[in-house]
Structures are given as structure tokens and as C-alpha cells.
Length: 110
Image (cartoon, rainbow, N blue to C red; front, side, top):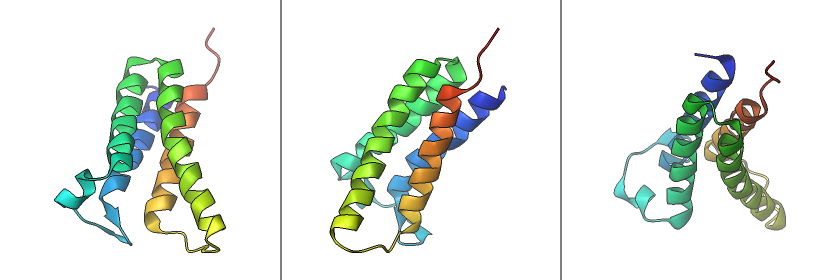
């Protein structure tokens, strides 16, 4: 597996796992499936994994953009509320998005 694919898979898994993070713990509950944002993040994480394994960097970038937009909205909400308490969920999401973008940009192929 290429380095870009590995970064994409790890980033996609981190993005998908964020819907199960609550506070600083991982909880697998039915409540995680009820939010639309959570389902979009899960779909984006799975898409990053699939497109990274398939070698489609453009589609990987599009899926990473979806997750990145949601992460940006959450950061802006924290700033607007004057609440700079970053949770483990947001940190894992941002790390996953950065890895997914790294997989999408990759290196130029000859």
C-alpha cells in the first residue's frame, strides 16, 4: 500500500470514528446515528477510505472537503460562543481531515 493510501485510510477511519466520540471516551450508542452531521461525517470517512484505496485523489479530496467543512463549522461555533474548550472529538476530526487532505494532495506521479 502506498503512503498516500495509508494516510487516506487512517484519516478516513479517524473521521468515521468521530461520531462515536463523546467527551474523552468512545461510546457506541444509537444516539450517534440520530444526527445528520454524524451521518455525513460517517459517509465522508468511508468515502475517504474507499477513494484512497482506489487511488482516486480528486474524489478523496472532495470527501475530505466535506469533513473539513464540518470541522470548520464546529471550530467557528466554538469561537463564536467564546468557548475554546476543544474536545477529543474535534481534535480527532481535525487530524483525520489533515491526513485525508495529505492523501488527496500526495506527490506528483511521473
